[in-house]
Image (cartoon, rainbow, N blue to C red; front, side, top):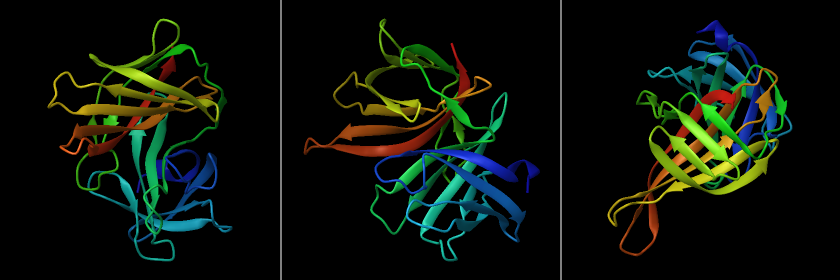
Length: 239
């Protein structure tokens, strides 16, 4: 197992509805190589004692939790993303014993992130990754250049040559949650929605973000069905 995984990570979670991890900022301790992988120790929102789970590496280079043991009800996984200045873990945790809303997306970094983001700025990232938590398929690059424009001149997210219109901007623990949509040009085309959570800034000035991407196709009933969902992970600096 790579020695780069060992030690303490600062975990920043974004909860969809109900949190699984204990706090917005918590810690992840990766230690002791096991027969199948390594041990991950972290805190849960409804437990007084930390969870300790064996993590197993899959064929794509990601890590997922062993379903056996007292915390087998958790689906905990991450993938390591190599950025210019630091490596981060991008992951998700899902409580299988609870309704679907009990899921966190998270980013784990070696350093704390404490500087609040301004609400009017241009944030630029070097790239994104699609379906990073899939056990059977490799993580795909999705977009080489991402810019988030927040200000008087307009609110939009630019991914390569595609422009998403921002619907909402919310403050979240010093960071920002930005929701955007790409409206279909033709009646039979799907609608694409994007939610991007930009974390607070580290002392180095580096930015990190995680989020999700959905494709919605209108069905005959008039409702909208999700076609697919994937996570995004990015790294960059504020402009």
